[in-house]
Length: 391
Image 1 (cartoon, rainbow, N blue to C red):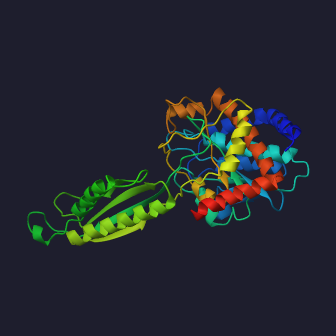
Image 2: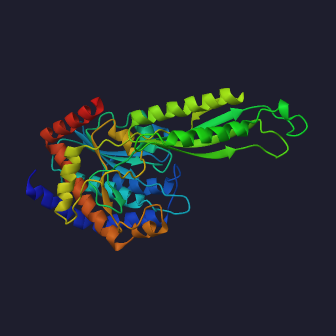
Image 3: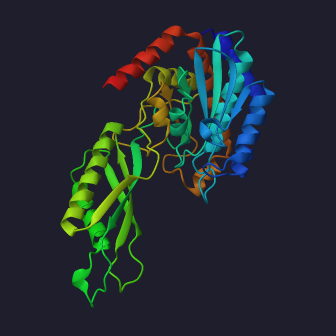
């Protein structure tokens, strides 16, 4: 793509910098949690509608999800907007910056594209912090006609890709038989004892799990009073693994362990998935490399993530299983910090956060234009994506 078009992107970002920062700050000052982001959705769709984008609300059956489209037909590049906050901590994951970055990139591309074929699609994705808005949107077909999905995440590292694992949660409920613990103890079947034994089995199993796999559980119901043998006990277990296939294996081991404990303790057991599955993230190396190159011009150099470091899970993994996608991290505070903290929430409205936002908007917009204008780039991205899916 010509350097003159990149220069126009730079000028357009500078022209919009105040309004984009105002959006980021407005979201930061008014945090809304998963599936309740009504004011955030109204703010973002209002900005896009005024720019001439065609808005679809309530997509995927979600009241706070939306798409905003400009242009027609393929190729289509999607800019992803997250805007849910954390209960009690506000925007301590920086989703206000993610939303403003996706918004800004979509507006800038629309303003400078000058007859470039294809479509720009801003996708409002609620409830990343546990509700899985993107996973539900993938299931509803929102990304079926998309050629690339682009977003960034603020963090404490400058990393070209996100080492994000697969995760899901399960409830395990044991059912026994109530009895008086001293009057007729032999008639009781202790469901809580069965659940505790499952924790013991999983603890032993954990020492033999592959890298990146683990199970973390809590007791959500353990009985009602101490003078009744618990007839029902329930736990909730969070499972993580490096890949979605490894997560399937881990979930099967949880089921097998629970069934073995039930047989040993004369209880019955039910194992049920209790959350949306977040798939592992599949990075589009060709697109993340292009984004990193654009960001490097602004003085921010992205590196590969440190080996063996995993930063949790996100529903961007589900999108990356459908289309070529990027999810780089760009630091808004030092590496001695952490997201999901009050300090990170403050950083999401700081001067450093503002600088990162503007540089990322420019890099995202340039990458989106590359996708729209470069058929060879799209072909390379899809070949890399399909090769990864085949492995």
